[in-house]
Image (cartoon, rainbow, N blue to C red):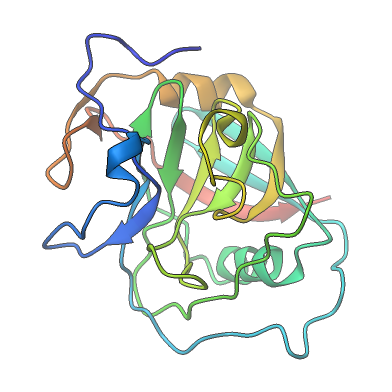
Length: 213
């Protein structure tokens, strides 16, 4: 699935920027589409010094205004999956929207209220941003992810240099892929932060996020 050729899209690397001004663009020369995550209350760094090697198998149901999406979290990414589980249990994602969507690239959500600590990257040798995988958005700095995430709607690790070595993949959509596609292909308008068409005309809301069997 290719991006709409009539859309004005700038390709560069995913990262977070301030709510009030854009940060410098990463990989501008090679023209990679950006995921821009808005900085949300960055707190103290969380390390994996005492993190377990794995976590228990966990599935997350995102009930959205466009339909349900079920995500199977990776057990070998305990920091990232654990952070996502904690935010779900705290109700942080309830009422948030997919605020940035680009057909043929990704849908991004996870702007939450309040302070969220940064977490350590968990890349590894088997980190692949395949179609329908979920990964953490971040700034251009290592270990800067907080709450924002994106769901790939293309094999971005294959198409974009350094993508897999930058963005931690921590799960896969196992149900509701049609909903993901619907969100990705909905009408969008110009972003105020970067030269791209990515702001949904009718943003899809996450009504609730919860752990399911």
